Amino acid sequence: MLRRREVNVALTIAIDGQEIQVEPGTTILQAAESLGIHIPTLCHHGGARPYRACQICRVETEDEGGRRRVVPACTMPLRREGQRVFTQSQAALEGQKEALQSLLASHPQVDWLWEMAEELSVVIPESPLGPAPEGCILCGLCARTCSQVLGIGAITYTRRRASGDGELPLQVKPSACIGCGACAAVCPTGVIKKSDRDGWRQMEWWGMERAEIKLQRCAGCGEYFASPGALTQVRERAGGSLPMSDFCPTCRALAARQRLALEICT
Image 1 (tube, rainbow, N blue to C red):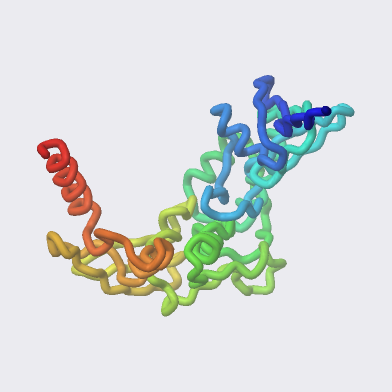
Image 2 (tube, one colour; image 1 turned 180 degrees about the vertical axis):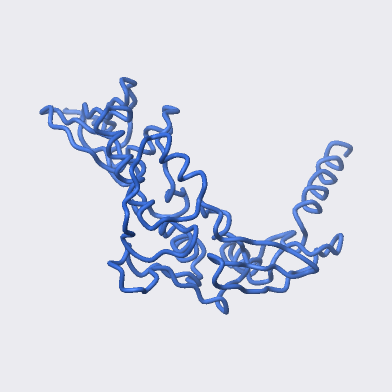
C-alpha cells in the first residue's frame, strides 16, 4: 500500500546571506524581521494591511534565473525556493533614496526626515508632487488603522499624492472620532497629536482639525482614563463583555496582583 507523500511547503530563502525557511506568501519584511535584519519603514504597522505608500522599505531580489529587481519589502511575498534578497546592495539603497526623495517632495516639516535626507545625500526636488498637511508624509497609516484595525473610518485616504489640484488626499471627520488615539500612536512623524486634560481628550490632526472627547472615569480610582467610544469598541471586539474594562490599567494590574496573591495564599 502506497503511503501519501508528505510535502514540505516551506521555502528556503536567503536575506543578506542568512538563510531562513518561510511559508509561501510570507513577505520579505516579515522574513527579515524574523532574522533580526532591519529594513527601514515608515508606513508599515502590523495591525494594518501593507500599503507600500512610503516605499522606504525597498530591497533588491534575485530569482533562480539570476534576474534582479527592486521591490517594496512590506508587500512583496516570497513564493520561490532559493530566492535571495539584498537589503544593502547599491540598487536597494538607491531605491530607498528615491523613495525618500519622493516623500520629501511635499516638503513635510519633519526634522528627522530632513536629517535622514542629508545623511543619505538625497537631493530634494524643487516643486512638490502634491498637497500635504504640514508635517505629513501622506503614508495613510492613520486612515488604514482607523478603518481596518478599528472599523471606525473617521480618517479617509482617498488617493496617493495628487498632481497639484489643491485637494488633500487625507480627510478627517472629527465628529466620527471615538478618541482612541490610535492614529496618533501610529503616526510616524508625530503630526497627529493626543492630549488629556481635565477629563477631556484633545485630538489634533495636522494642525488643521480638532476634536474634544469626554473621558470616562475609572470605576476603581476615579481617574479619567479612556473614551467611552474606545471602551465600547474594545468590548464589542471581545464579544460583548470584557471583565475589568471599566477600570484603568493601574487598577486592573492591582486587581491581578491581588488575585494572584489570594491564589498563592489559599
